Amino acid sequence: MNGSGVRLVLLGKPGAGKGTQAALLSAHYGVEHLSTGDVFRAAVAQGTPTGLEVKHFLDTGELVPDEIVIRVVDEHFAAGGPLEDGFILDGFPRTLVQAEELEQVLDGHPLDVVLDIEVPTETILHRIAGRRVCVNCGATYHITHPPTVDWTCDVCGGEVVQRDDDTEAAVSNRLEVYERQTVPIIDFYKKLGKLVTVEGVGEGSEVQERLIKEIDGRFQPGRR
Ligand SMILES: [Zn+2]
Image 1 (cartoon, helix red, strand yellow):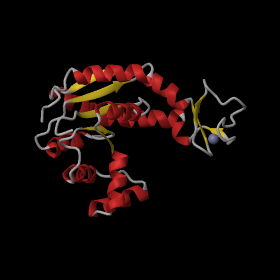
Image 2 (cartoon, rainbow, N blue to C red):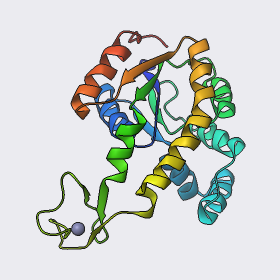
Image 3 (spheres, helix red, strand yellow):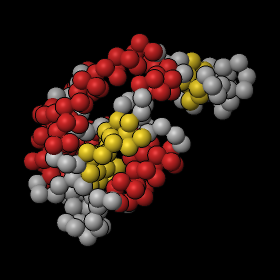
């Protein structure tokens, strides 16, 4: 892309469709989709000193501390990563400290825009708390679109259940944590004049069109 790729951050509640949209935008603009999980797994696979530290936290199920998250992202970019080619960050920054540090990591390659995919809490609860998953193959269903036969997977015949993470109580808890961590990030990007809120309700393709419209309105191809 020779230094002309778009540089984006996507924000959105758990269940807002952020990962799906990031993948679609990555294909549309031809830039790398960087989810924190992917960057973590790559660091672990490479066996770098930072990767080993990350592995410890992933193995124990503890939250990876800000300082290490930032270092992993920084090392990813420094190793000939997509800083100049453009990228879509999904799941990072997750805290205000990470957002502030990201500005340093970007090293003169500012973000073009930060998109907040807005979906009402009620909609998220309906989406996630209604979700049912096949224990065998992972196929997902919804209480409004169940398998054809009695909660038996259409794909493999496995049992279709609600995951513990998807109960209303668990989702409410995740949303609370998200709000607490993300409101300061949103304020931070508002002050930088980078934040755009995009309506996240509707078909995935409609949401994608809205996102592309906002990005194209702010991104000048060819800038470095
Ligand atoms: Zn199945």
